[in-house]
Amino acid sequence: MAGGKLAADVACLPCLFDHGRLTRARRIQEGRESDQYLCDEGHQFGIDWSKGPATEPQWPAPQELRDLVKK
Image: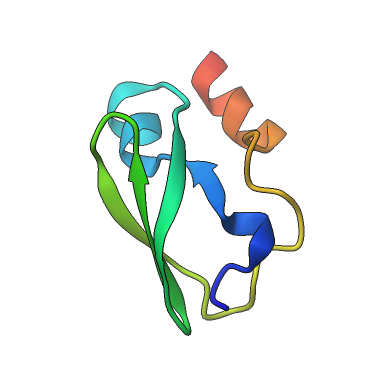
């Protein structure tokens, strides 16, 4: 259940923070409190959803992430 159906696809965090670009990552493993994701560039990472599942779609990327890329 971790991130729920709204978090099946998310922005790849390594692409975003290391390379300044938005890339979709797909959930490859769903856990109780965290999910594992893999992007098209090959980055694998986890997201902790222990505070609850996503309440809005995570892809396309939310505006605040799109704003980060523009800077």
